[in-house]
Length: 194
Image (cartoon, rainbow, N blue to C red):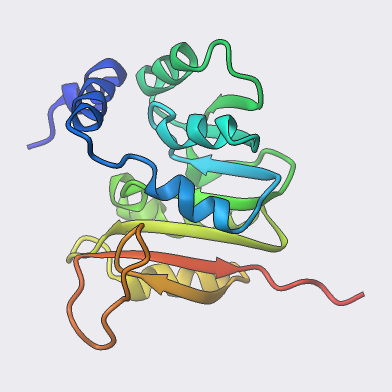
């Protein structure tokens, strides 16, 4: 059973802060994104802004989007004095920011929180924000709720090409043909011919 507290920004951030206090590395997603050397990043489903804030601290222009007003309020509170990050409260399945980004990050099980019927629209709308030559990086748990083949098919239909995949944000190899609990997938938008 999902409790509303799970989606309260302050309670969610308190759990993140408690994990960080134990020494847990909280910046795997930001490290993966930084490898692509982006100038701009869309953090789609940003929650309380953990990744977006870290990327902004690294000098990257970031737009964080989430549908949850409580999460957005916490993200704004935590980044009040930080330049280079903007926040937008919106449903990802219908998102249209009117611009593209070098990297679109869809991390933290965002597809699993999205209603099943809206998942293809979520992938399409996030993919439409990927600049030519840019990438969409998705990371989520693998189980019966959302098969990885569905994610890949939606990305392909949105014009993206699978470039690489890992089993963790630390770059552990994805098992070929074997079971995996998690996938981090990089899909690239090909450069348009001139």
